[in-house]
Amino acid sequence: MSKLLICNARLINEGEIRDVDVLLDGERIEKIAGKIEAAEGWPGLRHQVVHGCLDRRYAGLPLVQHALQILFDLVATKAISLELLVDRACHASADLFGVTDRGYVREGYFADLVIVDPNKSYRVQPSNIIYKCGWSPFEGHEFSSNIDTTIVNGRVVFSDGKLSGEIAGQQLEFTRAR
Image (cartoon, rainbow, N blue to C red; front, side, top):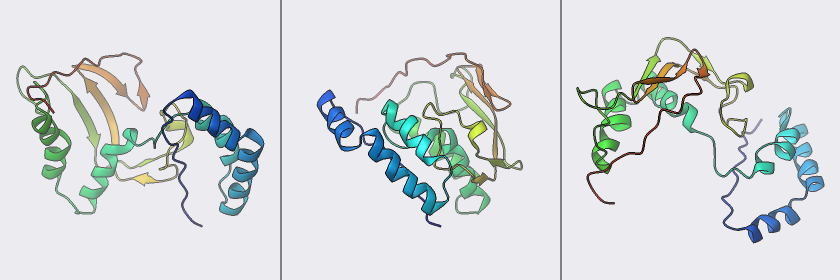
């Protein structure tokens, strides 16, 4: 069985959206998805295509929810060290873009933290996907780690597999221009 990903291109204007609607009207989309669903053993694909992301025109691939777990899988296989993960995921991006008071655990810095259990695995399934489009290219994959808690600006925004509903994000400040 081959692996398939649906990646929606970003549409720039209403004209392009109409062009896609004409090219991929509901009947054609459903027939194409039905063939893929039958050939690839991908239950629910037809419904996802007809009623999922394409209807709402989200662009790109949903990857953010599992980005840190991808890196922890690299640590688990010894492809990278835990220290390199922390440096690249936290320190390097803050340093590169000159993000003020973030990227490090330091007194006076904003408390943006993720608590990860590297010894508890996590299987991606429809019931734990929190992307607005409702699907993940990692569905069925088991990561070697589990995100326990996410703290943004000192406030818990994710815990026990659920979003808190609190909008804790703030505008970032930069010390250098791009």
